[in-house]
Length: 161
Length: 161
Image (cartoon, rainbow over the protein chains, first blue to last red):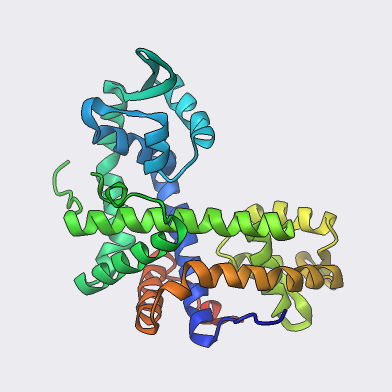
């Protein structure tokens, strides 16, 4: 127990509020998407990443990197989305070890139908309660955290659209 | 699709960085606690709340409120912690509908052994990369989010130690 720098009162309050806000945010977004669109938030994020990629396709490795997931954890979700007709998987020609995931037209329609309600919820719980300076501060804070949490992460990964 | 206020570039960048940081933070804290102490982060938080309560005891309803969980979701975790000897459950005397959860000595020891490594990890990924002003801004942002996400929440719930 020697040399532990416990949190002081300000840090403790910040930490508890942050944890509570993040927990409620994630459960709230997931609930809204499942209820209105039948999509878990994790699936929504995967479909959104694919929709922005060239030819709506990404390798499993690249998709996992964008989602900060591991290929093994992602493969279960992708299998479910394929069974639902939202994505297709295939081996890359001439490179059988690489799996490419492609958003189907059905997946694109599902994403487009889900997006307005999801964005409204993100606005309601985050951007509508922050002023522009707080939005900038939150980005700086998030990027500082990513520097500690994911030091090998490419900067472009945060900016993919 | 009418009247959807899509995220602008600044908001989009903030949102993606924030989601990635939060996702990595939660998986990282959970991994450290499971590896070094055999405790999921959710269990650690429940034990910490109980350790600070009078007589190390809280009703299930109150504990769920502090953790921003529901009593039904919490009951599975509490049953597991009871099986591991970390907490005890009993019906309140004269009020058989209310379940009281108490931290055991074993649970307190487990929490105390886990705390230094956990706090070091929280410092490494959050407080060590933020200056004091950013800590204050993060608290304001989190409290603003809580106002939208949990408008009925008591202020004292954020401050419990």
